Length: 343
Image 1 (cartoon, rainbow, N blue to C red):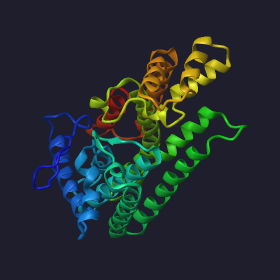
Image 2: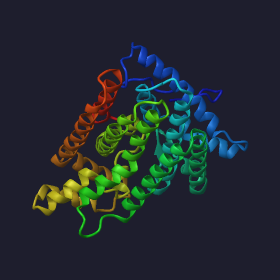
Image 3: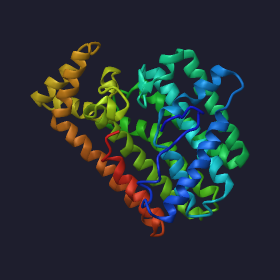
């Protein structure tokens, strides 16, 4: 996505959620145009600094996965209902707000191929901008009524608890891998699950679809993040929009790292060599690249990729309760795509 000289935004098309030449793809793309307009309006501020900072990541890029899931789920009801547009915009604003905060905590220099907000304006402005976007998301949810506010609040709580749990790390008696999966479920799965529920609730779709679609969202969210773990190791900055090995430098215990540590503890000498590189000072680009390439080449990264695919397959199984058709096909296609992507 890019910004033109007038500051308007372009966005991804409906794929892989719908066949490119289908009426559904046309409808989704048209409605995503409306979501883009609502996002820009919702983030508008009278003062230049908050206005520019609030639009920074909006204009930098993004797949708009979460609002597209709102729009797709709404096709199981009245997809054209105006409340659905507000719901989709609210979900994306929540997501954008978390990115501002995450980049500060991770000290990430790049987001979506552009300098992170804290690199441009400093940590304080980046954090406050995230807070502003949360506030604007809350205003949109308030338009939709108490149920939307409840859904946003419970999702926000999980997002924060997931971040705190990641920060605190597992207790000595905890399984580090199970702890990590729960963190991903809270930090990523919860908002994707909420996206589906927003789409169903505010399109008048049958309430019986909520639980299976939430189950799908939780699982595809974990698959999405596990795939990100692989992308951090194997994609270049131009493709992924992030510096390769960022998670390693920040000490994030991604699944390949956890698998490597488990293998080393079990006596795998090659895994122990990788762990030694990971535990070295990764300040220099040379040390980071040595650790990244060693981990990417080790079989544990293939095991992590297989685990991501297992979560994707489980997400697809959760869709059995939904009616056959283009919506279900689109959700299945998305679950496949999240583990095959390179950015």
